[in-house]
Image 1 (tube, rainbow, N blue to C red):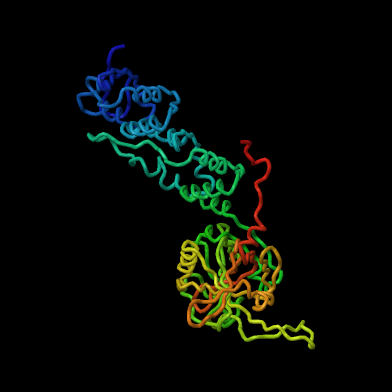
Image 2 (cartoon, helix red, strand yellow):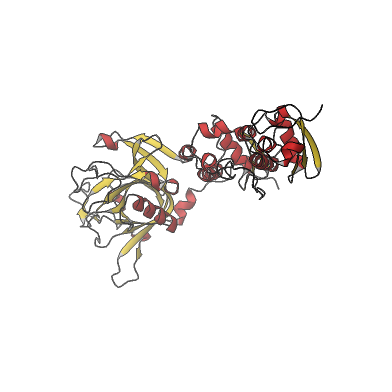
Length: 450
């Protein structure tokens, strides 16, 4: 077939064109060149340049990648082999301005996660739990240059490689595809939670948070009946807020504050609330583990603590000596991480970052010490607990009791602009002997034969 020169118009003529890529020659028909047009080739061959007359073009690009470019122009479906091939195809599709090829490549996301290549339908990444890392920062959205015409400078596009766990990514893909994730153990849940946050999957993050929702039928207000329990370390401060209304701001835990963007008013009291992704608001309860609870029997140092005036036990018969009871002041000894989490919560609702560690413990608190139920009255019996008590080294010589709390449930609230806590349930030990009594042996199936 004789060569026919292309006119300056956009209408192609028949014939073949010789494209030499780094010394390797490729012959392409007019039909192939215009199958994904306008592009770099059609612009050059329809211009007054010498290439349009000679129908020969020299290009300094990778000839191996160009083989796939030719297949695409001839109508074949090009499938990337791995993340490097994918990056090369994207780079050359951008260089040659092949918009159809770019759209085809972007429809199937190729990424290397921890050495394992994944092929993911773009629609899956955009359909559920979006916006996320992939729709905002991922390859094809932020890692590649915008659609620009070819320049003398070579394009450099890094392959999409993520230094994350591939097995966890497989679980996350199953979630994005609509399947349930089987949580193997607490370590698996925590690792999934870390990667869900890394990929900005807010919906999955909330599902992975260890939480329990309850309805408190004894709440005084309907707005405080719905409760949600989280481990303190799992709480997202961004989801914490205060109730919207503030009718009365004095000495009532069910009072409401102004909207969450306002600064907490001095003299006001309110529950701290939690809003999930769907917008449902709950009273926030937190679970803490492995902390010490100091029970002091000295004079009260805070107006929020219960009175320590000695009282008599009404159950004691009148003909017997009455036992002196002194209600303790309870103070949590929290870790630095727990304190920082509470400060972050306080900061998110614009409260003071001065956390009150002296806690309230109402008569309804379910106390368990050394595996047995314990009332506040029993905890106030200083004579019966004298063998467990210690004395301060200070000149005051005040007595105190240290309890080791394995787990406890607290309700958070704001009082006078500061975060305070109310204990709802507590499991604690008064001595190492009591703690040892609750230890458990390894199950038989977990033993290793030596």
